[in-house]
Image 1 (cartoon, rainbow, N blue to C red):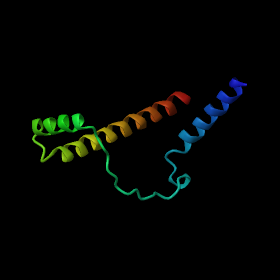
Image 2 (image 1 turned 45 degrees about the vertical axis):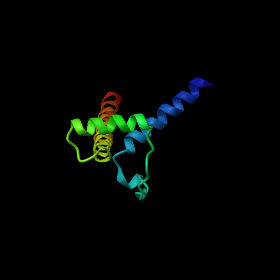
Image 3 (image 1 turned 30 degrees about the vertical axis):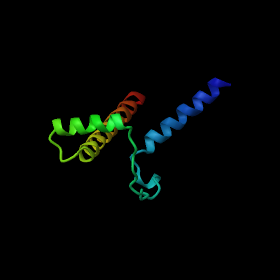
Length: 90
């Protein structure tokens, strides 16, 4: 039973990867409201210190930059992984 389920998951993965770059397969983009993130006091203190080290305007600005950079990095890694999967499946 697990073997059949695994094959189904692999087939789903192949379909998703094959259609990932086809924008007609995607739904309309949605707008997401900005939200706040709560950090522990110790994390805030560390962020304040690191913001000073990096000469940022403030720790919130520095945190925003760090998060944005990390998201870009993760997106690139995912894109590279998808490309490798496509190449390997040929």
